Every structure is written in C-alpha cells, then in structure tokens.
Image 1: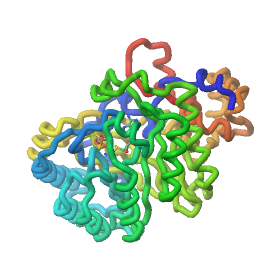
Image 2: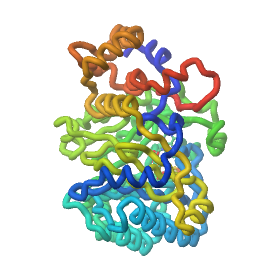
Image 3: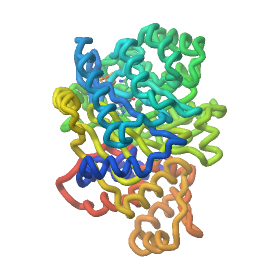
Length: 451
Ligand SMILES: C[S@@+](CC[C@H](N)C(=O)[O-])C[C@H]1O[C@@H](n2cnc3c(N)ncnc32)[C@H](O)[C@@H]1O
Ligand code: SF4
C-alpha cells in the first residue's frame, strides 16, 4: 500500500449509515404526513423492522460515542419501559390505524440493552409483536459482556433474539485500562462458550482500531485471541474521536492516540489476520465467516445496509422506539427526542417524540442507492444521466481516484478495486451532494476522520 494515500484521503467524512447523514437533515415532516407515508408503504406480507434503544449503562467507557445515560439505578428502566410501550401504542394508532403491524425484525441497541431485567424484555417483545412475526424473523441484541446474566440468555432464546453482538473493542489489558473498559479475556471466552453451547444463531464482536496505546503488536494479539473463539461476524470500527462534542472522550490521553498512517496500519494488520483465516471482507469495517448468511449474501449480491449495520433482509419501514432512535420510510427519516425525561413525558402524553427529520428528495434517493451499492457490493451502476452528471461535475475527483488505483470507471459502472476498499467512505463522498454544497465552509457539522 502506498502510504502517501493515507495522508491524502484521511478526511472528515460521514460514516453513511443513512443518506443523507443526520447533520444534513433539513427538518421533520409533520406527524400526519409521516404517518401517512408509513401507511402507504407498509406491506403486511413483509412487515416492519423495529429498533429499540435502551440508553442506560452502569459505567462510562471513555471512548464511547453512543447515545447513553450512565446510572447504577436499575429502577430507572421502569418509567422508560412504560414510555416505550406508550410510544409503540401511539405509533400503531397513528401509522397503522390501530392494527398492530407484522414484525420482520427487532434490534435492541444502546447504551446497554441488558440494563433491562429479563421481565422487561419479555414484556416489550410480547407487546410489540402482537401483530405477529414474519416467518424469517430476525432478532438481535447488543450485549455488554460485563453485565449480561444467564437469565437474559435463556430468555433471548425463548424470544427468538438469536443474534448476539458483544462489545469487545480490544483484548489488551493496557488498552482496556486506557479506555475504561476492563473485561478480561477469560470472561469473554466463558460467555462465548455459553452462547455457542446454547446454539445462538450468530455471534458478532465489535472491535475498534485507533484506541489509545494500541500498536500493531497489540492488534495482532487481540485478533489472534478473536480467532481462537471464531465469532461469525466482526465489526472493526475506526475510533471516532470528537472530544469537543463528546465530553467523556476528554478522558482519553491524546498523546497515546495512533493517527494517520499509524492508525491505518492497525486496521490493515487486523484485516490481514482475518483475511488469512478466510474471513470475508463484506463491506465497510465488517468481516464474516465464509459460511455465514452475511458472507453468502455478499457473494450473491443480496447484502443490504441499514442504520444498524449490514443485514440479509430489511423491510422498507424502520420504526425506532426510545431516545434518539431513528425511524425511516421510503419518504422520510425522523429521530426521537434524546433527553430521557422529556422523551418519557412526551410519550406518556401521547405526543410523537420526534425532534429531527428529513424528507427525502429524488436526488437524495439516487445518492442513497449509489452509496448502498458501493458499501454493499463495492460497485455502482449508473444511469446515463448519472454518468454524464459525474463526468461533467466530478471529473477531477474521479480521475484522482482512478489515478490512485482506487476504482475503475467504465461503461456506466464504478467498481472499487481491492486497494480502494479501505477508502470506501471517501468514494461514497463523491455522491454526497449535501457534503459538496458545504465544501470550504468553516462552520457546520463535524465528522470523524475517514481513517
Ligand atoms: C452503540 S455501542 C453499544 C454497545 C454496548 N453498549 C457495548 O459497548 O458493549 C455499539 C458499538 O459502537 C462502537 N463504538 C462506540 N463508541 C465508538 C467510537 N467513539 N468510535 C468508534 N466506535 C465506537 C463500539 O464498538 C460499540 O460496541
Ligand atoms: S460503549 Fe457501550 S457500555 Fe460503554 S458507555 Fe458506551 S454504550 Fe455504554
């Protein structure tokens, strides 16, 4: 790899979990317009995808960029669960005219979903699945290995929440201490073996590169430990360091942070260990064992991406419940209130807790499809109009990517090269008209570095 490319392409760019990214949203539709859009696009044969956000965590990790509230007071979940149920009831009333929709998938994210006691999981799942689950229902939970209990696991199996994602981040004790996330390898090993013995459908590990005190040596050790367990999927995220926005990150020692070429080498070292042991590089930051459904979907060009990551199936409607949760329809996005108390008050009064949103334009939808193509299949098929627009307006950028060997452009197709895969975010930015409109602006949203 030509290391001068790292300096050239290490820019502040969105991660494109949606298009347009949240900081470029222009305003939520009214509740009535939003509900009508959902109703028009709901297909009872497929159902809807549900995301439930549980914001509470018992301890603060200093690297954390998630929306969370730190508390040891477990009773805070009681009023929150009531509010989630109320929010669901209001949405069923407004969007589905009182008839519970079929559920295609449920994803519990956080914060820490297992802050909830098992009884509350059971209550929530029973309540939101009153309209039935689709035959190929997918249930997923993000789990904090330090606080998960046996009672949770047996209940997850009973509730068909069979995809477990473990927040690992790094196995090196020094790195764990620097990020205030101490979880010894034997703890993870024992949990992993329990999950395997209970036949959970898939186990994902979240790992991060670019954390304080990481070196190529520590990354190699961490990945060798990962391989001794052999999770089905691995998300290997670039550490997003935004201390001006995320106050907890001020606890991170800047002097210990690997940056630029040094950070990129950490990614490449982890990626190489995985590739040598036949994990498939399925997309941005994500790897999967060859036999896993995600790898198969990638190889058969069926892979899709949602706000929660890569998936083999998604409906065209996502309903987000809980603080900061995002909902999506083919027409618009909306995001919920972030403050727990205000969110709970809104829900209990029957008000829609949306505070932000965006109505998708035709141009947004085109850009979204191109970015999805790139992130899921490593290529984009262009219509003649898109091709001439790119040739006219983005020729210089495109030529630069071609010259650097990151992509090929011919006969209506942009295809990422192997060398270009780590720069997927940079190429995606080519289609981002909102970002281009703001080029050169000194104020506005701040994004994490692409590397
Ligand atoms: C939304 S968090 C919730 C997971 C869970 N609370 C846990 O940490 O065990 C999901 C993942 O986001 C990733 N993450 C959190 N903060 C990050 C940051 N600043 N940069 C990159 N990834 C981050 C971590 O890998 C984490 O496991
Ligand atoms: S990383 Fe996970 S457990 Fe740690 S504070 Fe953030 S959401 Fe909570």
